[in-house]
Image 1 (spheres, rainbow, N blue to C red):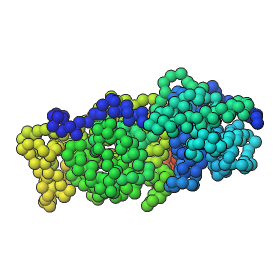
Image 2 (image 1 turned 180 degrees about the vertical axis):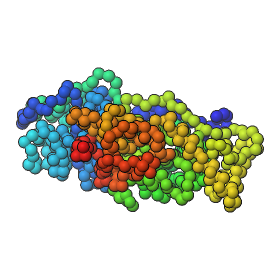
Image 3 (image 1 turned 30 degrees about the vertical axis):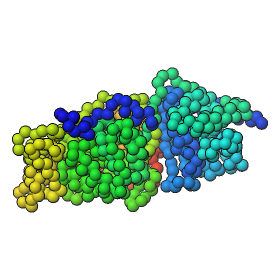
Image 4 (image 1 turned 120 degrees about the vertical axis):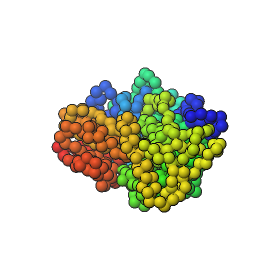
Length: 614
């Protein structure tokens, strides 16, 4: 890659400074608790913050997670919300551990409730020896609760009135009370507030004052010790990121210079984050008038030699299908992020699903090569989107990064993200080309030279109609056959390339006769289920299929070798990965664990279903 002085917009690597900017954006009552369940000298705590839309539930959960991560803990959190601006019910479930954690749990240990509805909805989810910390100004009388659950009233609304703060800030007072209950260092939380509101110092001071009020109120009005305690762990603090955050950061590190999208849940946060970073990162971010416009704009940018990406969900991807075909026929490298949600049509707009796998493999008319990669967690989202850019350019194909709402919007602590990544642009010519230029030169690999417009002495012509080697449209039968063979020949070499990228990953006991197979965001719950199964004396391994297309049949077959019982786990109705196993390996899983109500799996669900099967 030469002469980036001539094409400065094509310079790929963002500076370390810009990468770090992006990463960093992100009357006395006695407690009647029993001794508590055995903790095995470890921390595994689940806290739910709940209220209505407009109460700042998402932000409260994020601040809680960041404060815990700053104290050395690992967290994983799930935000459940309706498609409403105000009203309805929202909840943010945060799991805190002293080991890396991959999924939320079924039970809740502490519920921070801002209204009565939250208590009524979630009381059945509370574990034994748990607590409900509630706003006594909003909840005058508690519903009947288990004797194992302790209610703790805190006048959160009154606290906001005392300091003249808006009602939404009561969640800071609630979090202060929560950290007091857990015996946690308040200063860690105050530091998180300062960072979150550093551009609005008055708001930061109000929230800090309320956090102190909540913390002090608990210390002055309640005695006894909650069985769950959080003591900061010596060591480094950690980042708290979503899959969407990781995609945005990975795209920046991959050298993406142009991002266009039309807002849609759950992919919009990628647009929001990149828009906030565009000046610092030296990229261009646009909100298009439609999904069709978005994909056509990134095709145009890629034609000019710029790494470009869009992000959408299933409904938006449906509109992009025509543009995807244009990228396939014109052999233009683009990256499309698809964050799945339940369909068809609008479906459940704010919930999760894995129902679009077959759709993305075959989207658009005709046949053409593409890449489909499905990260399983936040770290993988970062690294796999970089791979997607490399594969797209190296083989001049569209690459689709398949997420779902659960991965896209759930928060997970991350120790670090490496900046030492490899970028490959394939046969891209930026400044000059020697000899006669044929954009669609027929080659052994199917990959042709790719020059950008403006190079002296050559004409760069691409076409969405069938074309000859020079890019001129033609309906010649022999040419049509040769060109289709050329394009599809890339699949063979794509398979070889992908085989070096760990397309299938193996976890757990490699010799176990019980094998669980899955893809995407089910990874987290399955990894946690392996630990639960081990506690019950059941050995198991997990085969994670990361690259779905071209399908890595050899690697899958190798990973499941010697398995006596194969159990498939998917968040869809029709077992779409299962259909690929049958198509490529003539293999039928012994048991299919399928969930399609819009909610992600919990480890306990998977373990219960496995025990039924064996």
